[in-house]
Length: 269
Length: 282
Image (cartoon, rainbow over all chains, first blue to last red; front, side, top):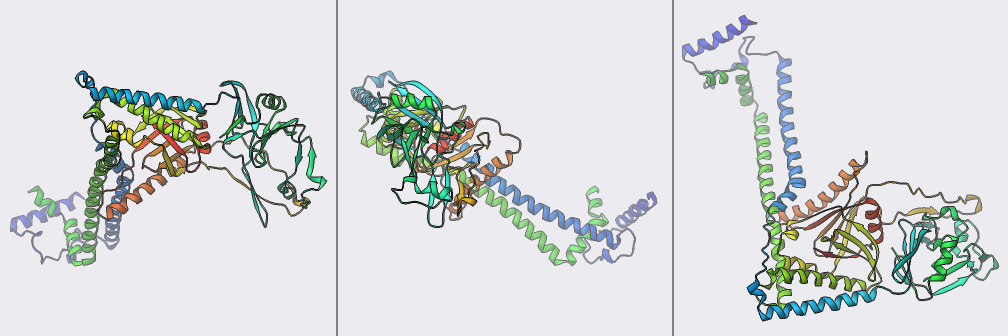
């Protein structure tokens, strides 16, 4: 090996000595040289070529990955770098003596008071109930004080699909009012209750539509048939299982029934 | 002499000779070089355009809200940089937004950056409150002209679209049975089901409200979170690229990013309507 290197170096030195610069001689066909040092075997040449191409592909890929990362991750941060300096805020006492300034501050203070008063009028002094449909919890308020909280059951967010119609069982959200209060309520079964069980749908006034006891001891009507009522499925309390109504436990329902009046607000979110 | 030795390396000489002999090889090298240079040039151009976008946005906001409000309120000179005035102006703007939203029967959000609280309200009643554990906002919101930014926020922001890692309504589909023999009772819902909660509200005034859960993500959720983040970045980048391709400065979207407990984040996302409203207090 050392001999080969010596030979190689010797050859190069020889070239230097003869003054022939091989790198500058375009006509020199090195690849056709028969020296074992200048003509690597075909296999090695192939690997070398392959490596070079792979390197090029890798460079290209890396460029695109870096460009992608720059555009997606770095450029948005550049926006923040360039987003400017902190604006100047003054508290000059000279300026505060100005009549126009004083007038403006008084005007704004009055407007804030007016808006605050207006906003506080929205806060009901009456009893109201808040229902959280995500956690299935209720909060009962009286004179702006929380008087009871507990579990409830709200809409299952179930979509019942028939060939003709689709029903979505979810509890509506927003502000509602109690429109009616009933003791020992009967339930008038809707079409979907029969469809869901694979039963034929009877006429609207059919006796099989009326069921006693399933709504508990009390029912408070909201809107479009939605109610707050009791249940016989007490183990499902705190779970989203209803057809849109809000179910409460027996004791909670009794307190809610006795606290809320017709017109009381129900806030569902 | 050493340099000459390197250039005289027979391997290099072979490569050069091959390159000279193989024009395709040379073409590929030139092509790759051009592609790399073009990519660098594009990155520089893209970066410059992106850096210009906040200034453009601030100028737009200033013209549309700042100047308009200044004229509407007939304000004395230099008052917009006074601390007392700004403090009152911020309070007034927040109350104005809240009163406007309270007049509807819908669910809305109030985001108080100063007190680090986010509330769900319905008709003026706070029905749910959540503490904000971390808060971060665009520099044009935190450092920009307070009068202009407050003017921008003096009426509620309306959600125009959202991207989320959870479903707005987790709907369960059930096909009605043909008869009683096909009837199957519903399965009891899994209330212990866990999913990471992260979402972004895009609002009508171009401000993004980004809500992330403050809890550390569980093992296995990092992929979902990465994909959620990537999806959102891709949407923003696509819009920016369209503008940049037309030699226009892209639209800058200021953001407010908050981290809140995941249970609260889920409640908020499910409670707020698709086009719900948000009042922001700086």
